Image 1 (cartoon, one colour):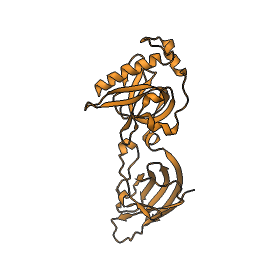
Image 2 (cartoon, rainbow, N blue to C red):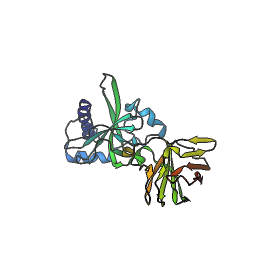
Image 3 (cartoon, rainbow, N blue to C red):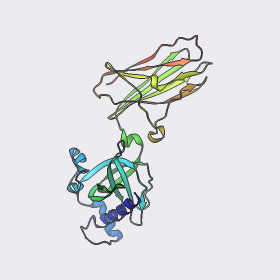
Image 4 (cartoon, rainbow, N blue to C red):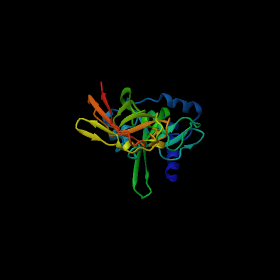
Length: 281
């Protein structure tokens, strides 16, 4: 990987230097470098061509694109810029993309998520650790920003505000909102224990009902995603809140239901399911 990154730096640096003047020279001055911001392009890459880009990057040289991804190798910097590698499909660790940033002091680190607007400048070809040939597009960034996990991997397509509370014996469960994304559904819940006994809530016991299907909780890494986990055991007078993630649902769904279970160490209390009916406009 280190060898690959050194090659990337050399190649991308060259791309930056010749990007605007279409020059074959290996040297440039600050005036030439600044011109890269106004490089002529062939227009925007079509949506249907994003997948094809990774099988034949050279075919799409000169096209503008907008991608998000995760930095998976240590960024490198020199006096002319910053160079990073990202997975444009971070969930599957696929779509290796090399990004050149015309800012030698750009602050970025491994595992950051980024949103990039740029121009496809060339194709990188090299070897992986097993001796196999790999190719990747080289992109000259026009605009780049560090973003959070949700923006990069699972942007919200539809948000349903609820803020609905159900109270049983002083244990209050509030369904705050639901976010529907292309690859997951996020349910935001708050629980307040206003009793004198410890209460228990296990996200795995909460089911999302969609039509005649029962959706189960999906595992999330709170450190990676930034999504807060709900505490399982809730002491008296304590409040906890977090997110339960479920598989994606169809945006065309009109009605769904959340069925949650809470228990108490006061075994004389008989709890019913906390059931929330959700209308999706």
